[in-house]
Length: 252
Image 1 (cartoon, rainbow, N blue to C red):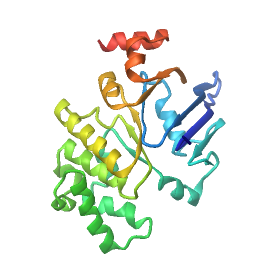
Image 2 (image 1 turned 90 degrees about the vertical axis):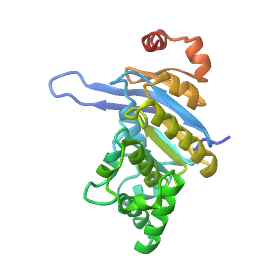
Image 3 (image 1 turned 90 degrees about the horizontal axis):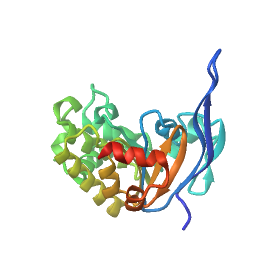
Image 4 (image 1 turned 180 degrees about the vertical axis):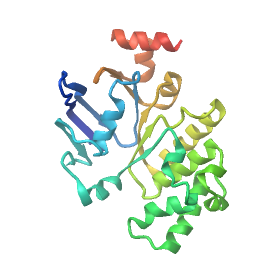
């Protein structure tokens, strides 16, 4: 099966004036398969955010290559990025970050559609449909991010992310700011959308129990490198790397 996303020997070095350079990501390779949920765990500073920012072309890699649908996107920039973002979208830890506080949720969702040529009327109608698909009343399109709960806002953020029908969602701690009950509801929604829309997820999370329940495979990052990978049950039950063992023990 051909990978949707493939990363080969990706490296990012940040120069430090007067000090040794900081290698934030070092020689990382992995693949995300169609329909797969790939988890990524590791302590703060392990390189997860830097890695994701390179995949989404917000940061230039120092070395290595990124392939999307078999196409090398390592050097894509400028207007060509719009084509890349049609296939990859992100959902963040703070859902309000996805919306302009001066505009309604419906306007925020519709904006992503209009960027790809939808009319204002068509995008408004589709925004209401997407909110309903994500478990919110269509009337929420008239509300602002500050007028809804965190869980409701995250549903709206997911609606915005799936508006242009991406093949990959990067979920960057997308449930960590929610209480346990709302977390379960959002995960159930993501499972439903994955089946119905045939998407793959890169799931960045510090909650090992969620990763074990939600992901097909997991990558363990430490000091900019992948130190272990495999099926979550196997990795968490019999870790081969000392860092993975310590990470699991700290979560018990």
